[in-house]
Amino acid sequence: MVEKGRAQPQPQRAIRRFDVFAEYRKQDQEAEGTPTDEAKGYGLWVAKVVAAGRSRGGAAGHGTSSGTAAHAPQTEGPWHLLDGQPQTADRFDQEIVDRMGGDFYRQVFAPAIAEARRAGQSYEAIRDRIRRDWQPVTPASPPPGRRRRT
Image 1 (cartoon, rainbow, N blue to C red):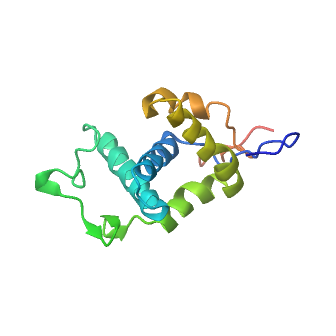
Image 2: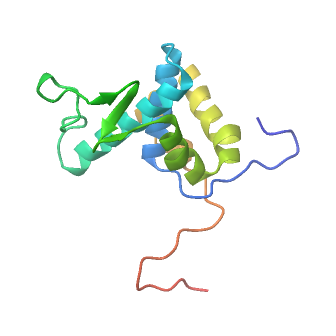
């Protein structure tokens, strides 16, 4: 946690629902006794599967990696594979932790998700509310062809 009198770190980039979902599912796995490195890989994998299902307009989790009998998830050791790439703890750290900033992740983000889970709040209940006040240190770059107003 942040020491009293010190400002909380801010995220380096905007916090996405994807980030909240991946962390929430990682913590679910840890609560079930899965080692942290495997839980990170699982959280990232399941977040990508759900996001891919939604982007195709289907129900969440009903894609080629959904885990249904016809399309069982591929694994390599403890890691789930997507497009032949293992979804590992290192990948979680690169795509989630490093994106938002390690200090923010450790001191603010992960503890806030853990507190919401302890309070019995579902992912759906927190996905937008929890990230509302987390503004990135620097605003996102404008879309190509548009200039930022000064």
